[in-house]
Length: 528
Image 1 (cartoon, rainbow, N blue to C red):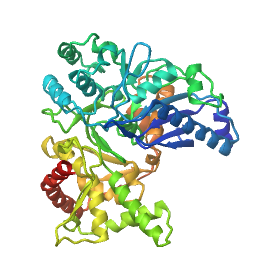
Image 2 (cartoon, rainbow, N blue to C red):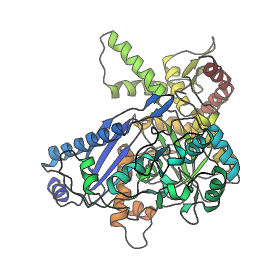
Image 3 (cartoon, helix red, strand yellow):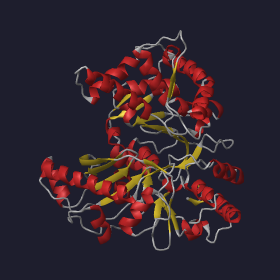
Image 4 (tube, one colour):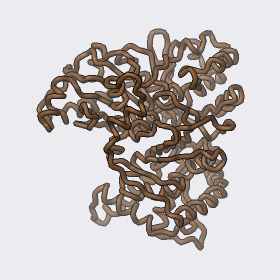
């Protein structure tokens, strides 16, 4: 088998996928059968500068080069081959945000990531104007807020894109994004697969800018379409060793939502997936339009353009991770050394011993603002009444529950008000690394079975590799859903956890406590 894989690498028949996530850049090289052959990664972290969450362009390229170099080293170690070419490649990144460039291609203001919650006025006005939900993190909300703030760079904008669109542009020279990524910039008309014409005109009339919006947005492409080739300049940007050859075709760049759907085989109607890591989002491919606009629900698309309801929350495991790190420091102080996997696994499993409703404990994981529950800023918070059952099991359980608290508030709109039906819900991301626990908590929150596939650990980098493979390998008339079902997931193994009635009732009781306690979180934001 290794000889076959080695030959595929030498002959350039592999696929490369790279995703820039919130805390890690990951690369996955797959074979002709879409099975991962090698991987590389680079840890990074956003920074808060002048009250804006950002990464520098140097962060982006230093991280990408290091990630790619580690991938090539893995290929060399495993197969004794220098990686020079592939059949196709694709790049994805965290969705949304604001990267504005002038006519010379210079970045006008520091990259504003999805994590910023400073566009409430713009998002509200645009939601009213379009009668369509415009979340704060969308690119168009950032742009209009800059206009409202009379920021001097606005008249100079010649190109507005996302992180994935920026990387793709620099590697290929093409100013394009996939439709799923585009749907997090500006509303998409699913009938045309392009930006919504009426809303483009409404925005131009409102903004009164010296440019038209359609002229500064990237072109929209659908999964399977060609999106340019790696240029000589792009190859040198990515590979500092100089071995990577130009001319490799690229698929449309996508966001982490789209790659998550691909990686979990959740692009067909009535399927859904939950990505739970630094942030958390749930996506459900809809059978029909919702009856009304909800500010808690985003309407985006799959990489092939089907309508998707998305609940996105800024906070998930960051505060939980901080508590685990505190326990690790405590153990280290006593000379007790334990690995991260063992520590997480032990503490997560302890949560299953807790009271169904967390024993009256309450926590909020709001490291940053949480628009779903109406917060522009956050303060991580743990609070309890004197008679609450303060045990380690309940402490871990409440922090697992609160990781999904804001998500449940949004998903309840879909499940209870709109009666959206979900045949299959798949989980991926760090919350599901410890077997069963994350699934059981999610099943309780959603009152639905939750599956995790063995391949889900590969995440979005594998997802964008699949989209690149679809572009390269699809048959005439073969949809993305059909391709994934037939060629990728036909024999995929998964573990499914059904909702436990006691856990479901416990999560509902916790949510009553959570909703009432939001006044405490509000006081913390105002007072600290």
